[in-house]
Length: 87
Image (cartoon, rainbow, N blue to C red; front, side, top):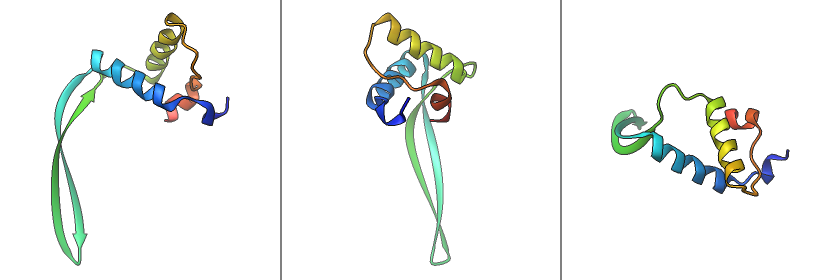
């Protein structure tokens, strides 16, 4: 299948809704460090991330997505498993 025909917006929407039902939203503090003119500047940002349980694999996520499409009789182009893993 041609990757340009995959409906990315639908895929992102599905993944976010799936993650919100099973995942845990946790605050994550991210530190970035930049060197500007020889001076090191550290920047911190606090953001909420949704973390899925560790036992989920790409195969399981793909199976869940495929089952969702079949159950709801959706007419969307899904990525192949290999493309799904590499996204």
